[in-house]
Image (tube, rainbow, N blue to C red):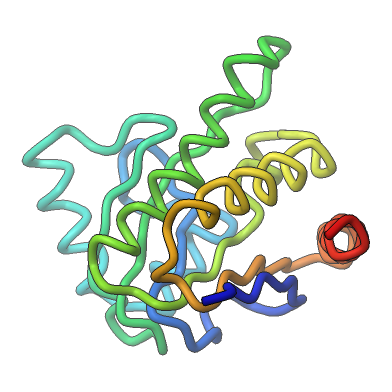
Length: 178
């Protein structure tokens, strides 16, 4: 089965997929950007499950992922992953960002998801360069999909036009290269 990989410009809280990914912080207690939007739109059930996870394991380390209900969102699950804060240690930051995507995909598959939507992890207040982050996101997803065939759709949901244009260009280049 071929997996559809697309980029859309939209609000991730409105996307109808099995799992949406939240660009969370290590506390899992909500914050700004996409994290705050998901917590606000999804309601208290998401926060309650995040608190339970934080109480059990102390939050979520950078590059890892945890899963909760999606509450009032049109998805079934929210997969919370913590991307790296960009600093000049590029190799470590790139590896941790790839882990965020990979671990989110693993959790989606383990929970029976057929479709998943990603925000642009680490490109907001965490400062990861948008082009580099998009390249890592797409290559990590493609690498994962080369060995796992359960997912039918992977969406990259871009809130801003700059990220959307980057993903459109990179995905079009991938299609030409096939």
